[in-house]
Amino acid sequence: MNLESLKVKIYADGANLSDIKSLAEKPWVKGFTTNPTLMRKAGITDYKEFSFEALKIIGDRPISFEVFADDLETMEKQALEITRWSENVYVKIPVMNTKREFTGPIIKSLAEAGVKLNITAIFTEEQIREVTNCLSKETAAIVSVFAGRIADTGVDPLPLMTEAKKTVASKPKAELLWASPRELLNVIHADQSGCDIITATSDILAKLSLFGKDLFDYSQETVEMFYRDAKASAYSIATGEQDNAVQLNAKIA
Image (tube, rainbow, N blue to C red):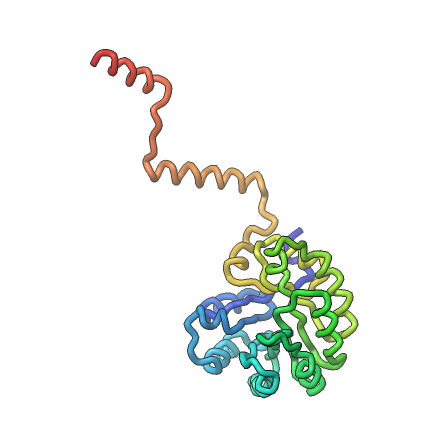
């Protein structure tokens, strides 16, 4: 299998404008996502300024920007503002707020108003069903299931994602996204489960050059790495004749 044979689309996840610019030059990067946590880590202080700079870089590819209010009314207002920024913008709405209130009412009203949405932080089958029920058949949407974080709890996310695809398929313009991958293998997992999109940070995307690599060659390269590092460190171990010489010198002394 090679990168070109994958059906799943690869989206870059991050908030570093330099990385976004570099990744925008890659034809296999089909879209972009970000969130307030990544933006804070990248030192972003002006949300709108960053978003407009990112939009200039990526052209007409889809990009998701997230609301950050905690009450549904303000979330909806922020979503209506964000959607005005560009035709290729998807507005990220978390599946709930910090009070565990399901954001379904605003998901439904925004979708019916034609706002392209990316519903994020989804973890359960029930959430997938509830969110899908709120989407419009006429409006594009992304259902982001955090498969990587699910796997962190010791639960295999593959069965969940396979079933999620069947659920999301009831809305013809909705796509299923595998979020928070932990390794390159997750790209294969996403493809096998029928996901439309996988989003990954630059550290995972950097590993794509390993895709389909010959494992025997990789074994040799790993051995060479160990050898180079040991040699550069000038490590030594007394062995064989050296041991005998040491012991003889000790007796003479």
